[in-house]
Length: 118
Image (tube, rainbow, N blue to C red; front, side, top):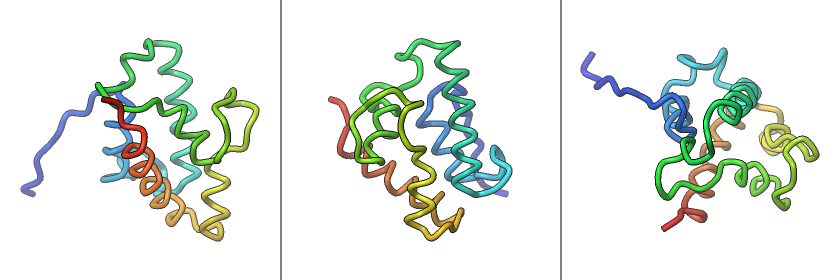
C-alpha cells in the first residue's frame, strides 16, 4: 500500500469532510447522505460546544452553516427551523443515498468556490 497517511485536524470541518469524501466508511456507517447528515449534526453540536467559530475553519473558508441554507436556497435562519438539506438532496437523487452523498460534495465544492473569503 503506497498511499500516504495524512493526519486530519479533528475539529476543522472542511478537513473532516474531505477525509469522509475519500473514505466514507472509515467514519460513517455507510456511504449515504443520511449517515453524513447524522455525523454532521453530532459534529456541529460538539464543535459549537467545545470550540469557538474561528477554530472550525482554516483561513478563507466559508461558514458551513451558510452552506446548509445556500443548498436549500433559503436565507440564513436558525438551523432548527428549516428543512434538513439531506432530504432535499435525496429527493433530487430519487432517494438514492449514495448519489445524494456524491451530490452533497459536488454542491459543497460549488459553494466553497462561490463563497471563498479573501
